[in-house]
Image 1 (tube, rainbow, N blue to C red):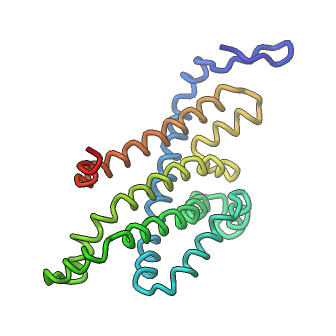
Image 2: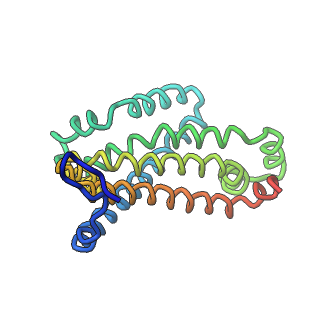
Length: 224
């Protein structure tokens, strides 16, 4: 399949380039995966702390949501530009920016998950003499898990897409291939980078869906 550009034919996929640049493609893919995992890992840790604060002290939910919402509304290119003078053209810059975009999604889903637990369930757990920590780990957390997994799925897929934007600071993983193809009007690296990004997002989403499915057997029974 080819794409015409004037009198010249610019192949959509040049397999000889794919074979010769296999190492470059693999490196870009691994960097994309590393940036995604790092952002989700740090974002999840921070979100747990913020959600715990909001659940313990209800008045903090509004400022926490406002702060994470503010971070989410900053355009990614602008955020990279703000961070570069302080953290340079490094992976640290990309991870800080990407992590900030996960917070609103994760915090709201974690809070929603714990708030969805019926009060009768909490009263029954208290009546059984469970300590607060044990009640959270054995009762509340499992019941909130579907919301948490949903948040992780949304945040992960969103992050996979945002990682490509980090190519503007040389840290975009597969985004570097896309940017290279756009700059040279050479479709092959652009198609390879975009296709692998989509496949990565779908694969990670499927993995998280599977984790949630097996971690919540009661949810499976509810759907049968």
